[in-house]
Length: 383
Ligand code: GLU
View 1 (cartoon, rainbow, N blue to C red):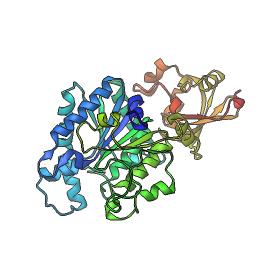
View 2 (tube, rainbow, N blue to C red):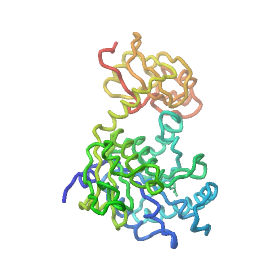
View 3 (tube, protein in one colour):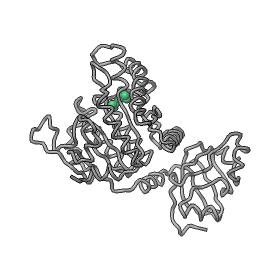
View 4 (cartoon, rainbow, N blue to C red):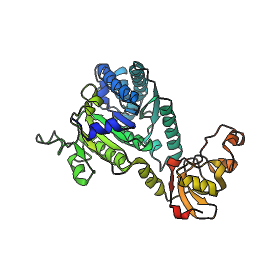
């Protein structure tokens, strides 16, 4: 039966799939191989149909504590970090072997939440995004986890829901699928209310919807519905739809397509509008660049800004900072996240793309500000 979730999976071009530890790892026997292979078969089908798939996989700590035979009690932070270090290798191997059966190659990305947060870690944000983008362009499957071994805050079960939402935002995915041990959002937490009903479609995450997830702060809600709804807020506000679906069956993504019960969270915005709203909200610019008339016209036609079109650079900024973009005659025409520091930008100002390596001393990136990283003000400000 066709429904919103089924249609969303079928039509999405870029999908982030988050896999929870309990689905992938059995506390006694390790990787749940049959389940993993069935999920990977679904991933291979979507990939074969032209979609780009990014996997956010938990399970490092669960695998590591198995391998290290750590006690069954709650682990301390450093024990968790050691378990993650051991388990992450095993986790990568499990994905790599399963994907290889379909001639697919994974690329491992370990992130901290900070790396995915444009506002505070813009440099690592751009680096992470560019690497993941490159992996996708060479047909690899990014397998992403939090870098638990260096994470400075407590590792919390459920963080990967948020990480997956941030990855979906950062990569402008159209869809985020959270595979979980529950098949969707219910009118009340089913453990508390036996009559609770599954909600197939959420148009907007309102306080009423949040209340259905149960109270935050309780031990049970961690990694439970509350963090999933939080993830939903991040994703849907940034232009990605989200599905919460059960991963407790084999072929969990094919099951969504076939119409098995799950919850679809709609987004009101498309990703590129959402991103531009975000960039436009970055009031703090660290510098400014001036562009010539030809470049200003090219930007208005939706092109990226190349060094050749820049006539002046001012201020001190790092790669990834927000800068103001001015027309030659003066007016502000937009803002963007710049791919070069102020020193580098000054060196390549006005330069043709084939001269960048000579001027920088290393092969640079062709764009100074990528069109996806730019918010323009209005056509009236054109010179
Ligand atoms: N990053 C953790 C792990 O791989 C899991 C965190 C989570 O599931 O939210 O073990």
